[in-house]
Length: 389
Ligand code: ADP
Ligand code: MG
Image (cartoon, rainbow, N blue to C red; front, side):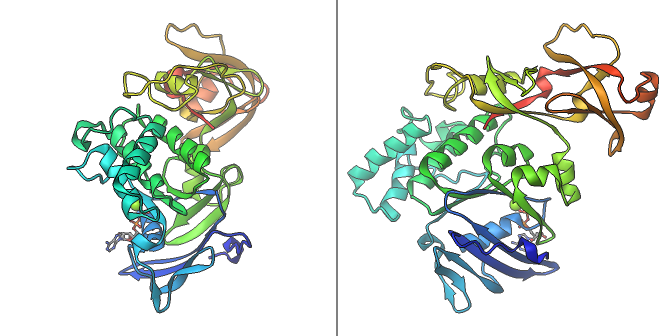
């Protein structure tokens, strides 16, 4: 445990010092969360991410340590506030809706039992407002069984936020969703956390979640934090092989134009069709084919910040300008670096941002590549994920 990782922030909303031993697994984690901050908790399977959330939520008990919110003690030696009295919401990959209750009644339940304690009538009205916010305004009467996985997760998000938590804990909330739906839910979570100013900790092993959703990243390994900082700084200089592997992607931070992402140097990156649709809509509300509540595209998408992500192995390197039938991104660049990489040779190429291609040593030799060589790079649009930021 590096002492420098302990941040005793003066303005911390949540402060936790967590110690636990369970069989051969032991956990020793200190973390803080500022008001309105979103922290991504990354780490390999079994590193203790879910255990950290359970300890914060009061679903598991500490061997030692404390948990406080705004200075109020939730867990300490001799003190334990029950989960339902912590004002900490938990959203996992399973929406856990009451199957016999309508979507509206599921959300209204949180408003009747929570801090708000609304009357039945008030709770129904407020629940409809929340369903509207998550793009389900005409599905209030539907039972969970009649809803898609993505729609159920929207109801669960509405229910979690309607309770007005001080902190929302999200444990891989997109993990059970298909690749078409996940980007919309990610965008919705981002918007709703920002609009409600809710502080959150999101557990994920998808680097894109960290880039899109979080202000700060903490990396857990074998029950201890091994890296911590702003998302950009941790990805730029990872201190842990897990993060290095995660960060080994090309990331283009730019703006949206016609459903594509424009890089700072003007290169246009065409992206997967599903993500292009999410970029083009000004709200994250699903298109008609996926959601019950389509919303018209409005106005300009200019200057909407967005990021495109693709793997170095998806970048095809050639010395002649390629001609392709399928939609691809093609551009020329100069070779600025040739380095050994985990999957072969990593070729760094000029541009803002620089793009890394990964190829075999034999391919580097065949193409006669050297520092300064001019190459043609191409990436299929279907290999490029994209997200609004
Ligand atoms: P992660 O969410 O990062 O995948 P977990 O917090 O679920 O990791 O698990 C951390 C460690 O605790 C693992 O070694 C796991 O095997 C162990 N563990 C998880 N849940 C239980 C449990 N209910 N009882 C005993 N050990 C558990
Ligand atoms: Mg887990």
